[in-house]
Image 1: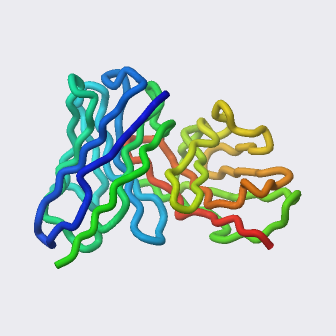
Image 2: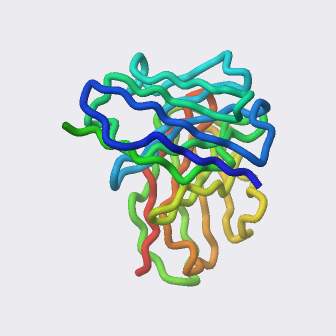
Length: 119
Length: 107
């Protein structure tokens, strides 16, 4: 069974940093692209970032480009998101999602970690 | 960037009804479209991929169709468990934009 467990959320200061992690199990982590999707309180889903299987290619939404960095450690089966220069509008529940094999849709999701940006 | 527009934003229906949600893309994305269901306080759940393929374990009352820029999700004979919010997502490129969501409410 695929399991994705996010952590690292919490209260961040405007202009500050947070690092999210997503520990995975139940599948061969290195064989799948991985993603971060966020959902602001009471709002819809927003794709944030994707990283390919080897980590060689990374893609970002315009809203986070230059501030967030996605990475992965295939030896630890873990996905990361380094979030810098935090803004109030980054407040959201951040989901880790697994891509289907060589496909761009998301077939498994974690339960999310809440990031609140406030002074 | 490809924009995804869902309609309606909210839909009121009764158990047993058939409902249809539409998703329009700003350019052709065929067939790279997925549909997800999200219940309050829960992560989204994949229903349909590649516009019309039913994910394993999803009831057959969910049906996806469409091509090019216009796609639909039809739920035939709504069940109590189906009252939720539904999102479309394109995966034409590595920027999987979601539609804004359609909330299916009990009439």
